[in-house]
Length: 182
Length: 234
Ligand code: SF4
Ligand code: SF4
Image 1 (cartoon, each protein chain N blue to C red):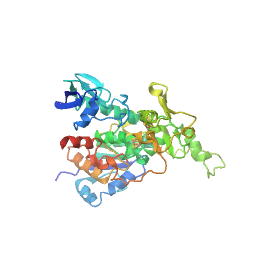
Image 2: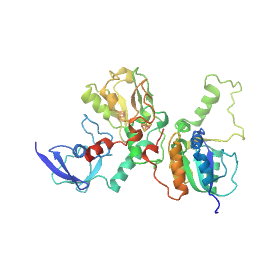
Image 3: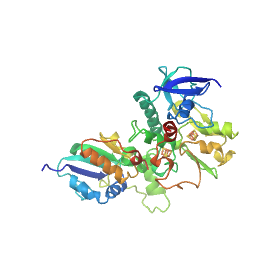
Image 4: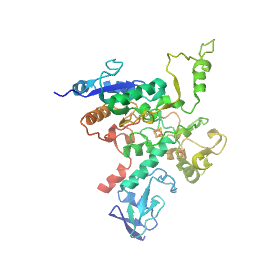
């Protein structure tokens, strides 16, 4: 028997809602596990790739330098890269800061907003904390993306349809009632 | 009344003399996508989503009258691509966060994007800085979602007889302006036709959102324009 195709998933600047929708496949998740081998993913908690993957699924856009590095690594390690959900595709909620200067965002969060207790007036800047980019980038503005599954989150059926057709080598346009931006 | 006969994608269509191509197509059960055109409003020809080729030349079908013997092309790959590009551009030049927009499921821009099967923006997202006017007790105006279609401008002038809205500046700086310091200075009311004329979530009544569950909203299952196409199949 030929080795099963490997699939990796990650959540960058997202809320894990798309991963929840993946779990929302219910018992089909077992079928998916028959079809593919899960590589790096929050589902099995593998922190890095074990082998080259057929498909990489990316939730969330790039909000930090680390997001960019992870996304680039996914591009290198996966044959096909899928952008899943509004944040990966058009920035989503994290992109609401895109027309506000970064300094203003940080000052609002750490110095000015009601309830903040920060007597030293320090904005966190530890090298351990991923460096924020000046704005959020959708994934396809950083690396090449092969397939998009929109939705916030995409319905489980849309994810299922897309993955199954992709694994069968015939990526299909989504059915009308499974194409959603909300 | 005198009638004219012409064809749309090879199909013979009859129109009253002076009728627009868009209206004649609609009566014949042919849907031509449109955004700035709206029932009861004088057509404007500004969004260009309804572009067709008339005897080889591109024209906005909402303002172009049907002429005897005209050969109109609508559903060609070229025109589909043009229309799709316009829809794409309208998305990236505003801030459209459908996931929390009260118009989602009712929105004509979103519905067109669904109909065209758009899964991701083709152009770079611009994330412009735009304002929201919350001053009015019954209505708000969110410029992030305004697509400058002019439907509120025309409805306010021609149907409500109020003249609450106007466009100011030109090109990429063009924007919608209210006739006063803010919406609350105007005589706009929630029941005005101007409010219901907005195809997107820009001009919205307050406190009535999210009333219809997901799955039962007008464009959840049925693509925009299907009602017109159904008439053609009967
Ligand atoms: S106006 Fe339409 S396209 Fe824009 S955010 Fe609202 S639902 Fe989406
Ligand atoms: S507020 Fe609505 S109706 Fe008025 S121009 Fe903007 S999108 Fe069109």
